[in-house]
Length: 397
Image (cartoon, rainbow, N blue to C red; front, side, top):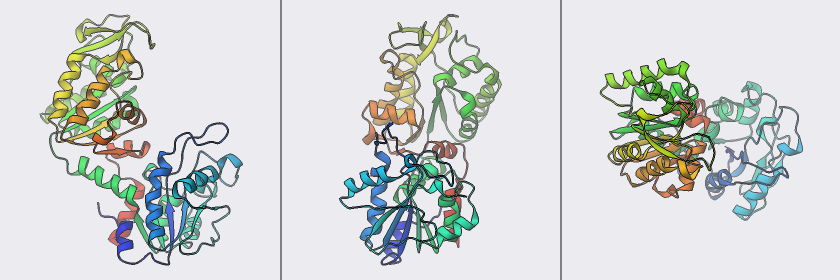
């Protein structure tokens, strides 16, 4: 995928003294008092902003925050807390500018934060008039917000159509490189782990990956549906019996290519879904009608770990059991450590996956951790994200 990168624009001398508009992803969680509770996205956005300042640009940065109503700004929609935290991280004052669409006063070496972009009328539907007004504010547009790359909005798509120069920031560039490495040109064998509560939410991902991967490891409620498809009793476990046909089709598609969907041979069961429930390891053929499967068993986990250690590329989306409960975390813990120990390039994404990576302290052993959420899932489905598409079009001229 060919896109213009911000680093190359700077290297070409096209930034010094120019106005740079950065679309970042600063949509961070806040408590009821408006205090930021987790600032990873702010920290991750700083390098791109600093690059622009170091290159002598007049810098504007904006983001969405929460779910504001277009045209109706409310105090809780404000990026002021974000600007305050970023000021602390960067050691400089960052003014917040409201009602900025018709003009922004910013000089080279200065940095301003433009108020919540989703308050602007026409942002979500990518209104062309709005996009042209925003494009007129800058000489260089930089998209550094992978988390919104799957949405064709004013600040993610429209402005990129009309800005004099449109390019990808370091975060977006890194995501593009990781996706290409893992999915477009993977080192084989390519192993994907797709886990979660429902097949229905990830069916299109399973179908897309079935055409490409060498091993498709399923976990959580998804694995239970695949166990049903394999003719196994799953008791009262979470599953979607109406999607057994789709699961069977995925298994068949993989088999036709000489690829595999490993079905658990042992599982960890309980009678109730709770942290203090008694955990019992059983063969997958011995699950009782009143059992709930809450994790893969140790034999299955060890077998999958061996596959992962031999992989060339690993894509990981979702824990394979209820890892939040100590009695049912062994499967996810075993797989996490196997990925960390593997020589494979690993790409991981999804909220629960990130929580598992943090819990087992393996951040430094994962090739690339995507913070994209919905955008990451759409990439796994094989979709071309709108933000990538427009930057590609602009790069091709």
